[in-house]
Image (cartoon, rainbow, N blue to C red):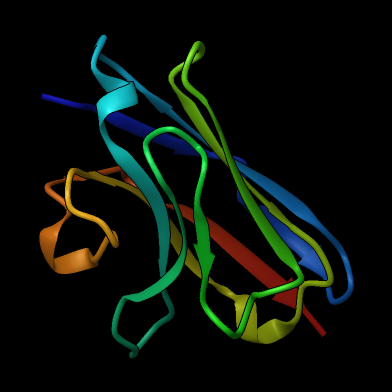
Length: 122
């Protein structure tokens, strides 16, 4: 069982940056691949970024590539999403997720954070 707690969202102007964090409980964090997904009002949940359980591989959605960076610290049971050059299109609730299948997909990730709101004003 893994419990995830997301944090770090907020209101930021376009062009700004935010850093999201996800803290996981349990000693087996390092056995899970981690990722971030987001959902805007009226839209389906979409993939943002994922990181392999060892941290050796990262993947990004095309819409965030070059602007967002995902990282993890297995010693601290944490995963971070650093977001730069934010645009209003990045406005959404962001969710941390954990799963054992790679690549990480929303449909196969059994553990989710509660979500943290990111709002980017124009």
